[in-house]
Structure formats: structure tokens, C-alpha cells
Image 1 (tube, rainbow, N blue to C red):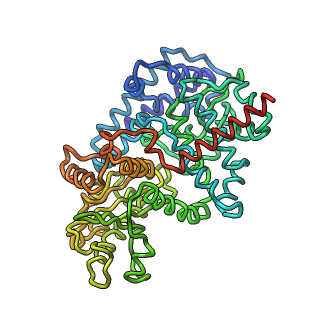
Image 2 (cartoon, helix red, strand yellow):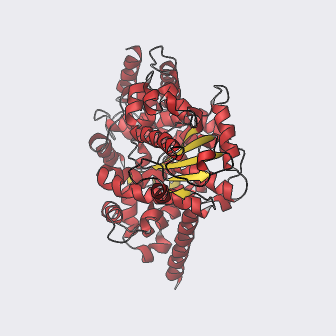
Image 3 (cartoon, rainbow, N blue to C red):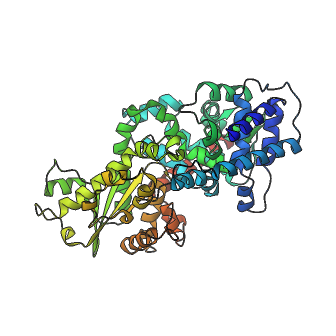
Length: 497
């Protein structure tokens, strides 16, 4: 109750000031040039953006009526939020310390991630689809432009952010306006909001809103609208990480509003992409059709099995909505409920392990391996490293329902890894370049995860020692980037004629 009262006092204090002045102070802090990414992180930009969210949401904070908040007062409010966050983190009412740590680290990890070309992944996959495919139709009905045009304009704006710019000049698209026409304004309408329109979004259109203490660990909801138009018409990027994460998730977040009509057909696209990464990176595997042909089409199995020297590596792709609350919930039962697809993947893993050794068919030398590994590739980063972490987070005894003790001979919890599609792309790319051998890396990671001191929350932590460079970028994203570059170049040439 004490923390709730402190939150209430801060929200009441914000009502003394005009919304415009609060946003102006937030932009001052967010646009500050810190000497290093670490110093930026220490400034807790997610808390600065929480102040903006509260001010814009609150109908008693008026846009232009009220005192002008000073930098000293704004910074004092930021410090109060920091102190409250610390109290929440130390609360004795935490139901599960592992789940709480996962929640606490979420915004920090997202602000530490570097910008990547991942924002092209979803639109590039959709651009490959036939015009009549439901996901292509959904995209064009939602975004009102083609996925190709979306990639071009996203690329153009992303370049500005990567170059360290804080604003988008009013004439930024002037040189390509003749080529893209009204598509430019359509694109900007997707991501630009002023105070009034942002208030409407926050008060009327938020799906599964975060409330109370959990808001302190939310990656800013404003990633959905990463550009803010001030009263003088200037287009401001809130923060480069907010823009980067927002563009990476933009297509998925908007199409998620369509529910199963989006995820069901796109799951097949996602699964095909994961298997395509294996092919592109010269990783030999047995596919699901071959597995079912060897055994039975009624048997539950995984998407792919990689036959290594003394182990099998199972690959199972899981595309789902994975709403933000899946990443933030620290209640063990809720985490269990909201990770149903991950639980299903683990069950498919041990069922595949049983199947290989059932004596009903021979799939290469897979039946003779001494251990199995399972990689569950998810469409979003879930902040879950794998089986051991789920065992620690789930309610006591619940993980046994997912992976029974008598099914752990070949596939123990430490041999199960949950990784985002971005991490899987990187793993496959490093393998192709000869920097990573899959089996030795997984054995090393499993051993590390069995020790609380060396265990990791993200699979990407096991890839830190390997270089991420141009040649490890997936072929799909390389091609999408090159084609977008060519179209933008053509647009510039046309303007010069």
C-alpha cells in the first residue's frame, strides 16, 4: 500500500503542470548525449517515458494549461520513480525471485540491445507472399501501403536514427516524394503522434494495458508511436532504442490485433523461415515430413532434427501473439498459463526423443545418440533461457507436467533452450561462417545453466564471444535491405531527372 500511495502522489503532482512542458522535459532527458551506452542506461529512460505515459493518459493533466515544469522538478520526479522501482524490487511479497528478476531486467536488456536490421524481417516475409495470401491482405489493409514501400520508408527513417539524429527534418522525404507520393504521409501517420492523438491512443486503444507496479518494468508502450510531433511541428524521436524496438515489433504488434486470423496462417510462414535458415546456413537436418514418413503421421514430433556426432538437436518453431504481459508477469501461475506454446514445444521434444528410440523406425543414427537438445525458436524474445529457468519460475511441481521425470534421460531441462528468432538467426549465421559448432556450444551452455552462478537468462549471452558481422545477416534480410536500397536509389535518380 505504501508504494501505491507514493505512485498516487506522483501522479497528482504531475497534474500541476502542463502536458506540453512535461513532454518537453522528457525529450530534454531522452535526447541528452551521454558519454556511453552504460550512462544512458543508468538514466533509466524507461522511467522517463513512464512519466510521459502517465501525464498523457491523465485527463486532469491538460495539454497547455498548468505551470511549466522545471528541469529540477522533472528530475526530482524521475528520482522518486527510481526509488519506488528499487522498493518494488526489494519487496518481500515477491512470489518467485526468478520470475521477479526476469521482470526487473526486461527494460534494461531492451535498452542495451543494439540496433539491427531485424525491422525488415516481418515485412520481408510478407512481401514474398502471393497477393491473395491472407497475411499479405491483412498487412495492406492495416498499413495501407505495400510491404515493399513500408520497408523502403522504414529504412529511410531508420538511417536517420542510426546516425544519431534526434529529429526528422520536415523536408526529409522531399527528394523521394515524387516517387512515393502519398505513401510517405500514410507511413508517418502510422508512427507519428502529437499530444492529443497520443492521449486518444493511450486512453482508448491499448490492448491488455499495464497497471500499477508492473509499469515500472514495461518497455515503453510508446514504442508503438516512436515519433512525437511537438506543437511547433518538429518530429522528435523519443529515444533511439524506443524507435529501434518499436520498428522491429511494429508489424507483429499491429497485426496481433487480428488475433488468430493473423497468427494461424503466419505460423506456417514463420516455421518455413526457421527451416529455411537451416538450409541457407548449410545445416543438414531431417524435416517433419521425413520424420513422419519414417514413423507415423499421427505421432507428435518436432519441425527438424539435426543429427550430430553424439547427440540430436531438435528444432521447434513457435509463432504466437506473445503479448507484452507474457514478458512482464512475475506470478508463477500466470507465467505458466501464458507460455502454453513453449510448454507444448517441450512436450513435442520429449515425444520426439521417445519416438526415435521406440524401435518403430530408423532415422539415420539418431536412435543411437546419448543425449538430445531442444531449441524452441520463438517469434518474440520471451526473456526465458530454457528448461531450468522455467522449472524455477513455474509453480512447484508444474514443470513435471511439462517434462515428466521419466522423460529426462535424453532430454534433461538444462538441454532445453528458448531463443528468439533473432538469436536463432545469429546462431545459424555463426555456424555457416565456421565460428560455431552447434553441439559443443549447446553442451557448454547446458553445463553453464546447471550452475546458478554461470546460468544465463538469454541464449544470446552464450553467443557474446562470437562476432556479429555483415556476413552473418540472414539472406532474407540482406536481400530485403539491398532491394530497398535499390528502390530508394531509383527514387532519388527519378527526382534528379
